[in-house]
Amino acid sequence: MRKKIVVVQGHPDPAPERLCRGLAEAYAHGAEKGGHEVRRIDVAALDFPMLRSQAQFERGALPPAIAEAQDTLRWADHWVLVYPIWLGDAPALFKGFIEQTFRPGFALRYRDGRIPQGLLRGKSARVIVTMGMPSLVYRFFFFAHGLRNLKRNVLNYAGVAPVRTTLIGSAKGMQRDVAEKWLSDAEALGREAR
Ligand SMILES: Cc1cc2nc3c(=O)[nH]c(=O)nc-3n(C[C@H](O)[C@H](O)[C@H](O)COP(=O)(O)O)c2cc1C
Image 1: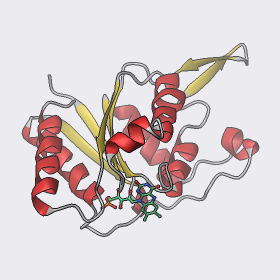
Image 2: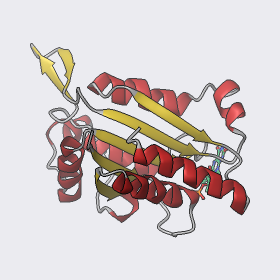
Image 3: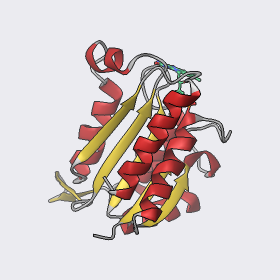
């Protein structure tokens, strides 16, 4: 089935040699070859401030770049989020993007002013994360905390499910042939829109 896919590049560094950029593009190319419709969001290229108060979160004007990103995310059936681990979690710029984007009215609506309802039901996601440490260390020593939070507290809570994950360890200065294997895996996932 032809799907509408958005690939969100969450690496703050615009340098094309970053592995995250290669993975996001490989996924997007695979998806296009598989006949899916693909749009891209490059967080590093967006102009938005960090959120600083609950009032801003609830009632602040949406920065135009965030409003546009929300429209693209609403449009898509399947989200692909790609980012590196920085100090155990997603980079601050990516988290700032998520805070700005997941405003009330986009991700959640409150029934009777209290009971949250996810507004993003029917969408699925793939989160691709790179890290310097071996991925087994992140998974079993650090319990993949930041990733679990994104998956359960942010995405599942808003109704996005299933959320599948790809963890790529030992990614700092990765050898070319190993990187090529991950890029072709990402392309295969894209073809299948998984
Ligand atoms: C500011 C910063 C903090 C980092 N912190 C971690 C960390 O806590 N754990 C880890 O395994 N790797 C850490 N790394 C390494 C990156 O995760 C790794 O270089 C990246 O995933 C490689 O992908 P890239 O080429 O797309 O940047 C850090 C890198 C930077 C620049």
